[in-house]
Length: 294
Image (tube, rainbow, N blue to C red; front, side):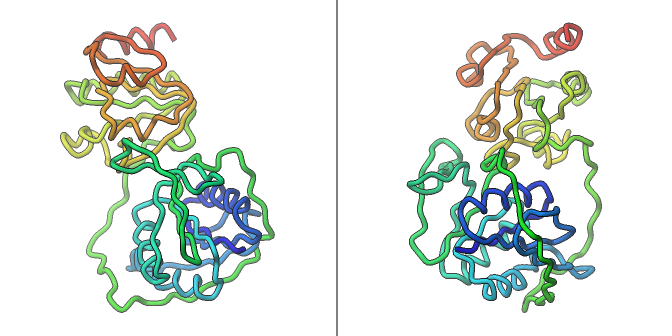
């Protein structure tokens, strides 16, 4: 059986290709940029034309899919790739099993109902399409000759028109790679207080994340930093939920962390039922003391 891997980021391409090797005999990586070395048997490269958006690569991916005839498609769950895989599924006459956390003998385990439940699914048709959460294939090593092939751009019949774009300011820490993540929530009364969380993240050698309200409610942090069912799905060695109540929509994004620490002034906050260690107190009092102790 042949597996087709679709990924935007090099790290995701490496992990997904390693996992695809356990599911198929041959691995083909569809790359939108420079592919990591020795991860697949074949790398199909495509250059997105200037002014085009990555979503419009769907027709090109479909052409590669038809040529390669894979039995499995494993994809990184970014916004662009989700659009591409959705169109690919429609073309193949099948569905996508989304946000897979693990592959088992019975099928693919994933979350649903906003992360409050899990289910195991197995595709019925001739091709299986999956979007796979980060960490599902953690620890596996990718391999392959990386035979390079360039795919010609297939222009869509109804392309997206790019009106404007601007670079997103990055925090400098890749949260998918960070061993420690400090996440800030509504318990921070002022934007300036986020420096307390940044100080703890720096002391732990980690990165700063947040709950959704701090990105789409008060716009204190970029949307690329929020953790939850519709945001980042992280699995660091240590996760510190500071001023976060612990609603399920957020917790599904961090519940695979090695150790969970919670700080909240409400002793009845749901987060205390889901953490390994909890501190009851205001983040303005607790965080400086933690930093000083460390």
